[in-house]
Length: 320
Ligand code: RIB
Ligand code: CA
Image (tube, rainbow, N blue to C red; front, side, top):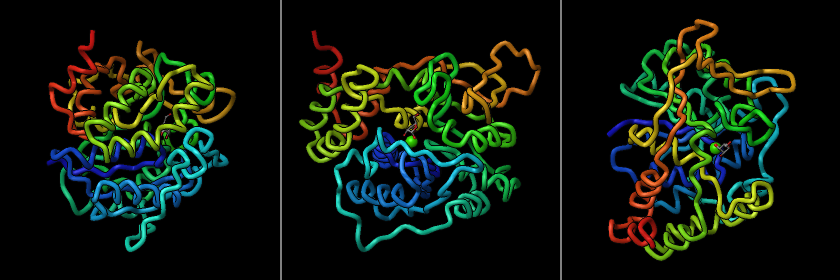
């Protein structure tokens, strides 16, 4: 099993990513840390507990982290994820189990006491940057780092040129890219835009796994409305689960090694600048994903979270 910390801002697609991680026997989720992004960190922590309750995994600890970005004013994404961050499903709060504060210290202490820990960051990188600033030596023990965020040749999703996680806290994102010291696997919009959870797939999931399928349908309904209204997409782009799937199966995606930085001010704030032609002759700090096998991703997602059988998958992927 590979030990991971998931840093997230649940968030609808974060919730689906947590479901995938918790359904994958090769992953040992040591803890979930939340950061202000789609919703404030505390609401994110409440939502992480709701997902853990649904998955019957309240044994996984949740730590609440940074409430505001390093420098910028905080801008949430409730317009996309709903006032409650889970598509306005308004599931009841989890009682009997609560989250703790101290996400940054949890990240540092876990890296210090465990070996082989990887971090999968699927929200703004404020917690990661604060932990790296506070204890850089702990990150020398980091196994791997996967970040859902950024965009190379794809247009932005919260400005013409910026992707939300890096736009929400560009100072944190750039600090991590410049100081982490471990290759950053950037799972950006170039690949995640190809991952669309369509109503047909959602219906299929509900039929083959009524519990997880109904949960996924309920939390994505609001997201579907947003995607139709603003991107004329039927269904919704589920960015975060691809970061989890890619961590488990590198064959799903391919990309380029390059030096990457994140713009921290001006009209292009949050833009990911990928020096693919090596103009600046700087050390390559990132592996930027450019291609994805979206069918293979969806098959993995459906098998793991909804226990789809191969015969079931033929219904969806080999239909006439
Ligand atoms: O831009 C998409 C990313 O921003 C996803 O992680 C989504 O959950 C939001 O955090
Ligand atoms: Ca997220």
